[in-house]
Image: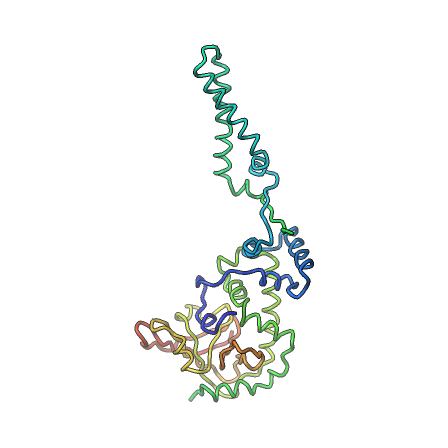
Length: 143
Length: 178
């Protein structure tokens, strides 16, 4: 509950408590409903994308929802993380072998180096355009 | 001479319009003077934080504001001019405050809440101004006696400035409605 002092003193930019789960449930009109209905309402709002970032943050902080990466480059990398790591290690081994072995052809050395560079390039792109890559991060109600 | 303190409170409590405020509107008034105060004000002041609100937040605020405005429109205002107090920097250049403004009819309470460096408004409220005595419609032990709510979008004309406290100032302000 805000106090008279807080209300009288408030101006834009003044610190204030963040939204919490109760605020979100009140805004959704389900604060006095059973929890299953509340979670359904949260799910519905998340699906429609009608909750603002402060509300999503409140739900996340309270453990009501989790963020899942789905689709997109970052999500795909995330899902295939072990395989990506395996490819990287293989490429690294290939490069080391190509450099030190007299049997490796110049073409193989180029392919191995590019193969090693590819994940690095993808990583840089993901970091540079993270907002675009993150658009596939979706909140989901944790039940 | 404008009245203040207990007499001002009695005048506001005698507003016939208070009887017409509906339970639905009381709930909205509880929101604006309670936990959702910041949410509503952020939207009304159109702050950068409000840019991150979604349809749920904005629809909620719109609903609360509609009901609070309806409640305040029922008021007839005090029959005499009175003085209330508020904390905050000088009124904006345009004089218009986009959000609701909280104040109190007791000078002592305002000065007790103010830090030495705070600026305090001494607001002259003309007779028939629609300001709401919060305690007349809400029954909460957490409310400060004599708290008032001034409608959103009200204009304030700065009359004079004087020194108070360490670095604080006292602004004599006149309330004008838009």
